[in-house]
Image (cartoon, rainbow, N blue to C red; front, side, top):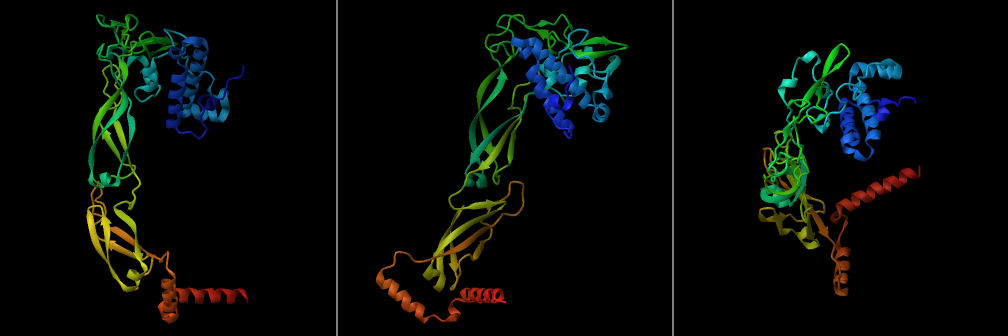
Length: 385
């Protein structure tokens, strides 16, 4: 049967970056790993080999270039025999998800040199980072707050202290790698270093697994944490809680928790960076005659003087009534946009009074209207040409 296109195997395009190729490999390798497919291990093993072979070619710039130019003929014999010979072919999940995720973790170093030799012992893996979205009010974002959140995460099983072994028992040293977590396999004229297929890189085996964590050493748990939200944060800002992510493996450190801030919509104010904006309704008489109105701000009420003959959409700036940015800088301002309200629900007497008032107005009392009418007149004159 013809060999499948390597890009198709990984589900990526020919323009995919190395990071995208690596992420696709991790996802598929985890999906088809035989340890996760006990019901159909043989079929999963074939798919796993196919994914590994595709990744080895596409993760190497020279091999990828040869494949892009000549197809499978350009890389025949270049893909190593993952799982094809020697002592087993599959590393554990640490090889897929741990470290940098590259094939240097799978192969090790040639001829016994470099980092990660068999004498270095099993590798420790840092836990995954996790995220949490925290909704806060505008007031909480501007002035800061302290709140508590509950986050589902993975922690070490306290019944077995993270060992994975049942109470009264201990993990035993792996007889295949003798606790190193890696083995050396001869392939042709050189040897390669692989994750031990028996203990999956842990260096130890669990003969009597803990019934609470099923031998993994970790369990799911809802963790309640206190989060201090600094003053001035905005939507999109992140707060890092170090070590509050997923538990590490083989003694590795925990991942981090990233709290993503989202500011709720406010009934009065909108925010753009350090500035606040609001609309202020003003009565017809106040706008015409002038006066003073009360305007809300986040730290109290202030009086705003409205000059006579104020038009709708005029903007007044209240300095220093905005937000102090979390990363420093000058405090923002509050911009108030005036909205002149037309009187409603008038009595007949009030309507008559307005009509008489309107009759007394000349052209000078509606400058914007007169200007607009002049523009409209010229527009229609131009159309008639």
